[in-house]
Image 1 (cartoon, rainbow, N blue to C red):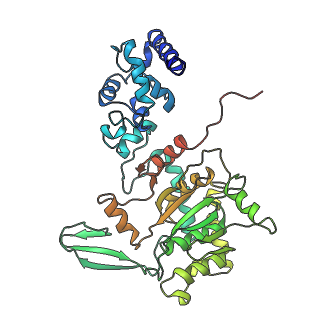
Image 2: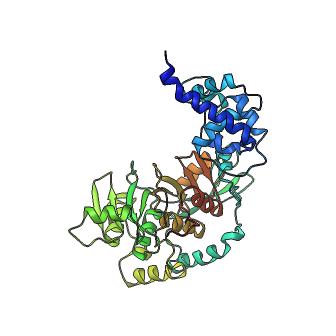
Image 3: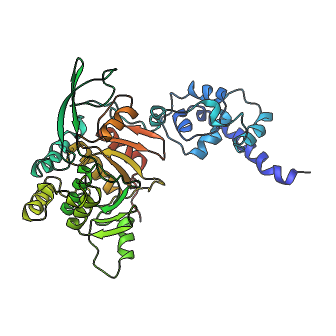
Amino acid sequence: ENMTTSMPLIHCSLFLLITNQIFPCVHSFPTSNIISKKSHCTLQQRRTLESSSSTCTSSYEPSYARTRLLFASNNKQESNILQDLTSIFTPNDKTQTEENLGPMTSEEKLKAFNIRASMEPKPFSVAPEVALDIISASFPAIFRLGCGAFGHNYKLSVERMDGVPNKSYNLASFQTWQIRESSDGTNFINKLPIVLYEFEGCPFCRKVREAASILSLDVTYMPCPQNGRRHRRDIQEKYADRKVTFPFMRDPNTGVEMFESDDIIRYLFTCYGSDGPNTELPFMLRPGATTTLTAGLASLSRIGRGAKALPSTEPPLPLILWSYEGSPFCKIVREYLSELELPHTQISCPRGSSNRDKMFQMTGGKFQVPYLQDPNEGVALFESAAILEYLDKKYRIQPSPVDYI
């Protein structure tokens, strides 16, 4: 009586059975793609897949991976295929859901991307594949005298450690003593990240990024490279009646929207500085020829980087980047985020910032920037070389190897 509705499933199951007999290689495909894509499979199927995943290196889309789950076992009988098909397309079945497999760790999910660069934090080391980039990315901080690398009114202090050693982030420690870094906090915590439309390579945008870093503010950056088709176009359409320049700031905490870098800097220090309207601007951020000239020189060593858009897939949620202005390792990551037009919330952690303690506790006693968290995939990783490779494989749309006619 239900023949009309069941015929498509029967036809599909017969087709898959024939395919399994003709192409037995479907048994050997990487299980990391299935696991990372949250396919619904039983624990026995997962173990069977893991035992037969060493011969094929191709990657498959989730739909293909789910279909091939039917043939994970060589002893499958035709009578069970229709039942397996029904269970796969019925994720509410508690015996088939991902929860029975246990939560996937960030490391297990990252295996699907086959990242070759090391993801383990290695202080004071440079990956060979980014060595030249790190050298050239170091000059901007020199021209700007490290502006953005230190919190507002940065200071050092020697303190006695309380209880367990290395419980919090410190610059150095010896026996029961530690050297602590600190800076002035803000007089108002920004509950929502400030939204900043800007792009790497722009000297005026750099000044605003430095101000946000000094104040340890959370900022959601909306990259607007020169040929960008996303965020740049949004601002141009909204303010079509005027000449649009970058940076452009929107503060959801106060409702203020503002163009012009010098005005934005003064606003940030007035609203978020430790002394409010009386907060003194750092020398390298004061309006004048020195600030403009050094900001322009800082862009020369990396000219063009981060200024041109590349085709990419926009994530549903902004990425999270623990970073600060002045670090060459962070700079090359932010350049690529700008080129891919990927929105990202920066947790600013210059030297002396309390955000360093937050990362130290969150990562179990580790601190190193850049540190990228992708809430869309549930992964997190250190090391600039690994982050660049992850962004390239996950979000960049690679050019077609076939020329269009």
